[in-house]
Length: 375
Image (cartoon, rainbow, N blue to C red; front, side, top):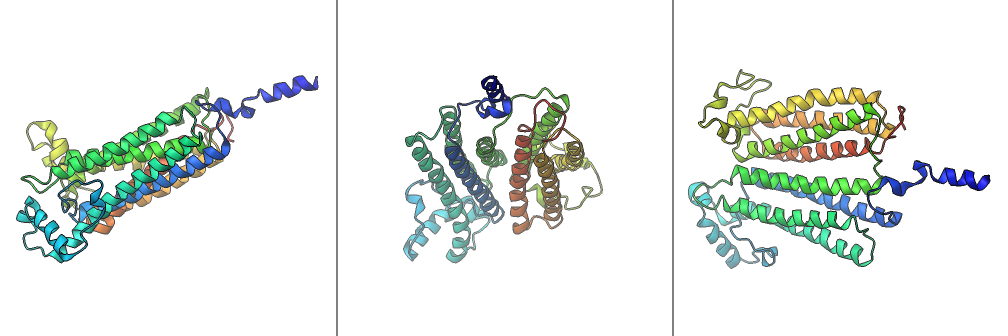
């Protein structure tokens, strides 16, 4: 009888953590080590996003006209090398049309922002690949996790290629990078960040099987759609940055006295307005912010009484707070016509909001799957 009771206890879902994972059970210490590694890499992606924002806002991104993944790690070390590098920059449209009065010392200022942006990208690649080899050689990576990590590494390589593809677009006739390539570059950075964070969160706390609780399923779906809305904000933000739409309509809450500016469809054909028209691009970005400003507080209120864990409620409150800060940063950035510090902070704030939103989505999937009470 005692043996049967023990067997029944062991078969309870909460006592079978390996059932909560799509992959085979893995050593707890190894899971923790890999999660910490991925969180550190995520922090490095956040850092490069902020540096990239400053690089863009200071118009430094076109200062290095060559793509040299290996030898490019070493900057110019003497006056001769600086003059040679500056001479290459002088051949670009940006120098000839915008910075033709720039001195070598002024050039060094924009050079180093782009230089450190590229160095950070290389460091992230090394910080990801070498520990991956170590964990793989020590057999600490379970089979189901390996393809995910290799996929993240492939995204990193694609991001590096996209970065150079973006820079090349500004080295021709018009000294501006393509807003399409800039948005793709920014979106890839967020995809890498999302992938690392989501895998790391799954290693810290196992996700439950699909819930049968209708209320919880609805909350999970809402969290998912909020994540898509946040990604929409990232893409529209990339377009705003790409065509410098933040320099126009520097009023709030209306756009020069209008909720919908009359110039919103002034370009023909109509669909190009969504990518090339400052009024339309900024309106689309504002619209996403308004939706988040109304939906997130409503979602927070629903979670207060929903069948979720206490931690999920706490994370939802954190989401509310970071979103309020991000919206305030966005308004201040707009009203002041995008100063460098506020613009970079606003771009970094987007990744903070996304990180908390990912955490909340994960917490909604580790909540009790079949009960109506909070954990």
